Length: 262
Image (tube, rainbow, N blue to C red; front, side, top):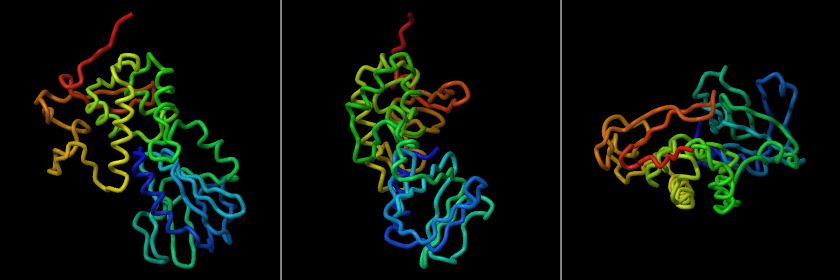
């Protein structure tokens, strides 16, 4: 699933449509096959966590979610598609531009009803509503949930994915399996999450170590071999609620467990 910075960058690409009138729309899913957004001016596209909201005149919003491997390509009209046509779920066209949503989840709702789709989300790490105190409050409601699981729950803070989960926990010296209540400085961990996304929202490569050399750009995510800081072998495992487990990486020396037994 894309990180919040990738979704933010996608919203910036879709901003090319802002101010343009849609000449046609083509929804390639049965539930929206008869929907036609043609004739409407695009007002803006904003990201909300991992969701995208393309707002149109007449009070309509195209909502999209990139899921695991979705993407939006924005290009000049008739310039050729970069991915197989059968992967397209929605196509938006203006006189100059074509936006193709591949493997995306899409809905069309009234703009006033956007909260029905994104109202459950926690504070957006890259949004104007970012509120670290509210993110802290939401995490503290879950004292027995592993912190690595709680960070991926978008209801607590919106925008963290598997990469930044691993890197933020490393930088904070926190074992991702520890319960929220065992994290010694939860506010610091939240601050690191925010700093990571802010630092990368305008970049297309992720470098959390400060070292641009291949294989040394990230501290633990997908790292094989020894920790870049102490040399201890990086460990990996599965973490998350049943059916939603995701792979997690950590250094057992730099991130010593603080779990307590009842």
